[in-house]
Amino acid sequence: MTSIDSFIGFPLLVIAILGAILILFLAIIKIRKTANVSFVTFISTALIAIGALLSNALGYYMYFVISAIVAMVVLTPYLIIKIFDTPERKKAAEQKKAEAAALAARSQDSVSKAELNALETKYQRLIDVNKELISKLSSFFSNDNSMENYLEYCNGLLTEKVSADGCVILIADEYDNTLAVKSFKGSFPPPYKLPEDLPHKPIRVETNLRFAQFQLKDNIFGDIFSSGEPVLIEDSVKDPRVFQNGPEDFLRCGSYIFVPIKQQEGVIGLVALARKPENSAFTRQEFEDVTILTDAISTTMKPLYSFLAYAEHTELNKDGSIASKYQKTMMPAKLPVIPGLSIGCFTNPMESVCGDYYDVIASRKDRISFIMTDVAGKGMNSLIVMIMIRAILRLAVNTNQDSSTILSWTNRGICSESSKIDHFASVALITYDSTSKEAEVATCGNNPVFLYSSMDKSLKQISDPSEPLGVSKDAIYKNIKLNLQKGDIIVTCTDGVIEALNENGVQYSTESLKKVIIKNSNASAKEISNKIKDDLKKYCGITQQYDDQSLLAIKID
Image 1: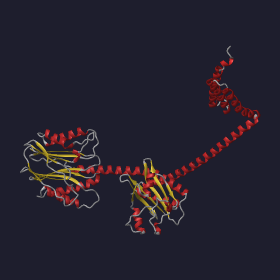
Image 2: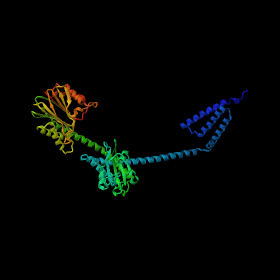
Image 3: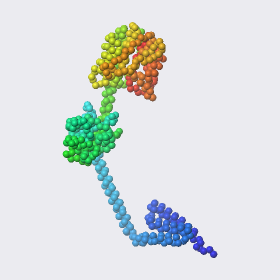
Image 4: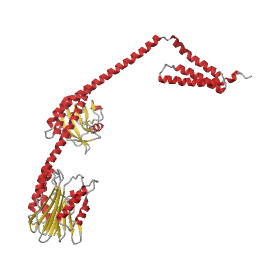
């Protein structure tokens, strides 16, 4: 007869499975927090489930008995505690916990309110300073050197605000990657290493700083500018960034404040204030005051920059319009009729550029002068130089000198001009003798001269690039003599024609010009110039050009 103990394995397996299920349910309840589940309950259930599983697997039922005993031992102290626990005690503990949470919340609210009040105060001060500076800014718009004057005003405002001994304002040059001192006031002991050969005298040291330019690294100005963060140095002796140039008293460094001038596009400058070592160091409050004031200065500098850029653009357009008006009066209103020659020309002036000028001067039968000039610069500057060149050439071509000599005389006259404006120009001078059909060509700068030979149907450039007019008074120019035949064509132009760009940024080039001349070599000079003009317009399309385009064609009929 089979004993009932032989079936004990199945109940033990069921107990193990149910124990695992109970542990899963308890975990879900704990996670979802639908009831309070003690960790003791997890341990007791797990012990019974593990004991049942071991007894079933190994066949020793003592494992289950031992695990049940251990589970009861673990559970008993917890139950005893719960027997003597009262609802009032539990309620008091929960109330105490709630009071602690409320106290922490009130403390956090107090901190938040304090921080908000501090921020509100700070930004209110910033708004007030901005209002004051903006109202003052308008008075600088109509001044000469507006930005320099405004920085001087800001320098005085900063110095007065914190009673500094000295202040410098540096502005970045984005092309040279340097910081240049734009405003200097008071006594500012240099915190950077002075040049070895600079005498340690106050006036020399001050002059060095006033006109100094600093790299954006390896010096305290450049390093703080690059970091973009304001710095307070209360004791420069303990700060390795400050270089002590001493031992002279006026070179001893004290306390410093450095604040970058920031705008949306990045850091554009740096404010630096100094106090001598015998005076008290800058405080944190003064450091904050300078930071707020520098932020306001940065905000107001933006509209001033915009105004100056607009004013400069307006002035250039105004100068360009006036210059273009006078430029047109210097061009021949009507080309002279010269027996045995046909002449064609065109000019496409760009807005505010006004650099090209051509002329045809029939001084006598044996000398007809053709001039093509491209003056460097634009606006009124180029117009002034253009008038000078035109006046000298109109006098000189009436002499018996050859083309190269006339150019040399013109060059000497331009080089003697001592004004600060650029006075450089490219000139092509062609003199033609209608009695002998001989011509002389002299050029300076980049204006090319081409000769089409009707005899061999070829076209070549007869001029070479050389030093422009106005560079050196001792420049020597080459004189090229030509014996011309019927059907020969001479063409000269400014580099605005050759270097004209299409929508892909590709230049029109000399080869394109040559093709049009050769293709239309049987036409008159006027027709050739019109064909070139049309081809150039078709090539460029609507692409913006940045240089005047002028061409002069001469054909021997």
